[in-house]
Image (cartoon, rainbow, N blue to C red):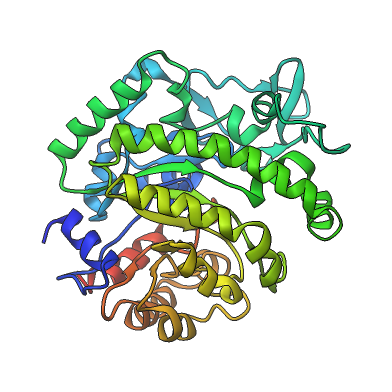
Amino acid sequence: MNSRERVLSSLNHREPDGLAVDLGSNPSSGISAIAHSRLVNKLELKNRKTKVFDVVQQVAQPEMELVDALNLDVLDIGRVFNVNDTDWYDFTLYDGTVVQYPTWFKPDRHPDGSYTCSKHGKIIAKMPYGATFFDQTVFPYIDGYPENYKDLSEAMNVVLWQALVHSPWDHAAEDNFWEVLRERTLELRKNTDKALMITCGCNLFEWGTFLRKIDNFLMDILLEPEEIEKLVEALMEKHLASLKNVCEAVGDIVDIIRFGDDLGMDSGPFMAPDLYRKLFKPHHTILNAYVHKHSNMKTFLHSCGSIYKVIPDLIEAGYDIINPVQTVAKDMEPERLKKEFGKDITFWGGGCDTRKILNHAKPEEIKDHVRRNIEILAPGGGFIFNPVHNIMPDVPPENVIAMFEAVNEYR
């Protein structure tokens, strides 16, 4: 099997000839810029550039030399943009790491070493000195919901997740964007046997937290559900219009579409399952049904935390894949997940805990941990190896190498 066949076999719950592996197919399955820089230097790769494609989270786009060195099976089609050296410039992070930022991203440095980003005269994001990602500073609906949503686009455009968006969406305003996206994605598919993914957001719960601030929005779920329903309807109109364009442009050549909606915290879902079923599940169902009807793509939901109690609903809503499979959260033990849901949904992640193991354990302990998770999650397919979320800056390169050495035992 080639990489694409290996991934698709596992997504169809057939055990492939070897473990399917991902690192960097989307902004929630990757590696931070600092950790990436240390890794490529440790591996002594010829191409040691660290391109920060997700500037909010400071996540690197793995260069093809690293993709080949680690035997990765999935690529983000965002890499078909910003392909020239002139699309990037060198930038030195607080610890001295030299990375490359896209030329459109020019944060302002302050005397205290912090950085801010502004739009329409507002500071919309801040990274304090010594931090490794940008924080949101503007919440357009923090003082209350609008009477109508005719200005929703303007509100969304000052939220850092949209204003500082990663590729390919940093080119979305260009006149011929969809034609170029298709043309370049066709070329990528022709020249690689990797599975292809596109990140398309379509967040609902999360957009409520981005617009209202999370504490307000969580209270609104109980106190103002009618306002939430109106907001979600307005978001759905935008999401379905975007999905129409995505499906028409690349729905026949991309294998996976990545959605995001963090529904869980360490101790359980952010809301009772019955509230999820009432406020969000019907809309998630529509999004999945649209993709499945109008494309060949599998749907991938990135949702952090303990989502065990709503996984049956996510399956019913039509999701094919969940990520990052946060195995240290309540009720998210890999044995439990595989036994109860392994035949119905693919686990993309859960391969190595990034909170305590990958960053703090010794290499042999990491290998034992990885072997155990693979032995639980891989049988019968329905598993793509990926660490639990992004590899953080504090992870030593030796530990990343140990993780992939364990993975390669199952090749």
